[in-house]
Image 1 (spheres, helix red, strand yellow):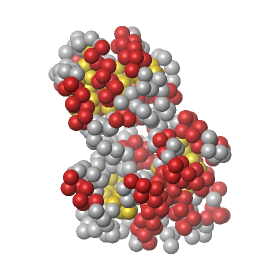
Image 2 (cartoon, helix red, strand yellow; image 1 turned 90 degrees about the vertical axis):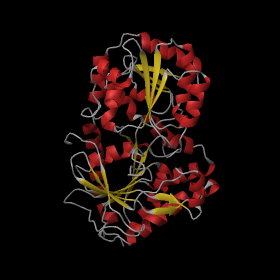
Image 3 (cartoon, helix red, strand yellow; image 1 turned 90 degrees about the horizontal axis):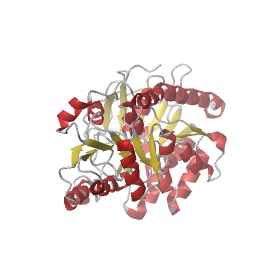
Image 4 (cartoon, helix red, strand yellow; image 1 turned 45 degrees about the horizontal axis):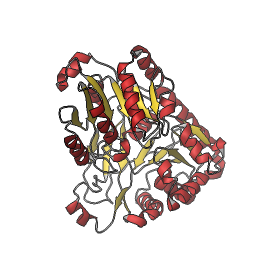
Length: 441
């Protein structure tokens, strides 16, 4: 159904301020509803790895339904003063980019600012985001849509709930990994529950996230689990010896790998601490860089130095998706020691490159690593269990063909078909109550 994907690229259209956008029209096409995708986490030329999982999912939907993306950027008046001391704090993209979807079509992505005060002020993010998107839409009346498709319950889901009332359009929320920590916050948990109540449809990327919403008395029939998929045209194995030679690794090395943003919750430090208890030939590849959550690389490098592991840990930096399969092919085991996840797409990507997985028992990890033929699940934070699982995974004779086949069975085609079916059904079900007007007013 979806054409074989290529790597997404972005072409920035320069503008003098955040109020200038080239004209663009997107809306209802026959019996296909148009979507406004709302997410503050989305790739840009300033942050090319931010929200790739959202881009990958929705750009495939774009092959079936017309859509455009609004990615509000947090901002406040004294932000430049903080950026003087912390250069990577809230990097601001251009107001508008044209990005290429997997099928070659061009997707319009807008980056309007919204006021986001630090600290306790963040509890107003949903309100401020809704105001910014409303203001943006008033200035772009040619932008038409039928459904507001928000990603993350807070603050995007809150903003979508408010905008749904203003525009008289149905809205959806996709629940992802941040729902778990936000569900523990005093303000965020209450805002999230309100957002779920306002949404016409909730997509959870894992059953564990569905249960988070159900625990807040959200009707089960409103929530549907639609996990992420894997792109087997991008993620496939190459010759291991060649992959290792390119990285300066030996054939006799036993190689662990983790791919992700360099932030504490991803658990890189836990794997590093386990290395001294493993044989010297065990090496650890770290692929990733700074993310919207911060940059933990300096602390990780210091830990490596303190443990005298400089010859065993390789920081490879962030890599484009097109290059990841070559690096994954050099490894023996993929490790994800994270504190929380929604549906970790990187697990399927590693499996598509024939890697068994060791993952913490959080979020949807147990759902992805569905049986012991695919990998091992251990209790998060249990360093002994992590060490034992790594040792077991390195020494077990895995059916790597079977692991790759499992990943290929979880393709994006099925996920996109599910999403499109729900969007169309939602549009038809709400046709009477949300029509006749389909234009932003």
